[in-house]
Length: 303
Image 1 (cartoon, rainbow, N blue to C red):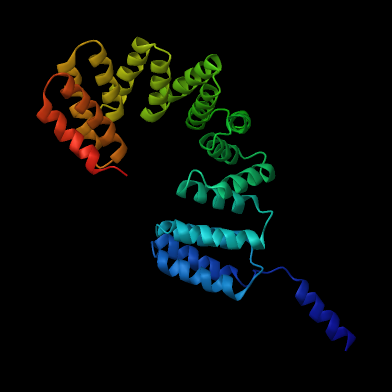
Image 2: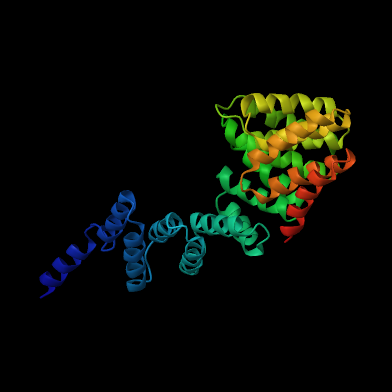
């Protein structure tokens, strides 16, 4: 009897695949085939059947919901997962980032990302996510601290450094530190120039900083560079239009603004900015019919 008991213990101690692994593999196969509904369904059943499954299972479920454009369900899955694994850095990071993308001002997103950055001190992306949240929630010093940590961990990654330096520059500018802001903007632009695909939005932040500093000619040099890389970038066209208008070249300004409006597509913020400029300029030129057309659009699309 003792021998049988010892034998059973020996078999119990053997290392083999956990029972959930074939089910997880099946769900991953569904994901690979693009069958996201079945992947989500299989994982939900798996998680409801067993409470102690590892974070990887929860993360895979969140991926399935995100593939289905159901960020709400992914966030719900993440919150359930955190209750089971409150110290899992990857779960805190993923859930916090999902919540952040859904609402930049969500305090829960900031809480999760801040906690994740403590648990994952060597993960630059986590620090960067928290830095972005802090910047957009008026916590500039926290943003600078987080992004400096991300920067120290991102040597050789120009795409990451461009984004990090841009956040640092905006935060320093908001704190009234123009010199530090410009240094960061310069570094961001240098990294941007080394990328295969130039990021026009990052460059635009530098343009707008220079305009606020009344350095319009320097700003226009970056506008010109941006449009050489990305000629279909409407906001840069609008910045050029504003500059031309200030120089009294209203016809050229209108042409650039009309191009900016055309390039805005269905983006309501870009459309509003271009139409506001067009309305003001047409009014100034006495072309009230054209001005009213754009003014009516703005009034009809008030939030």
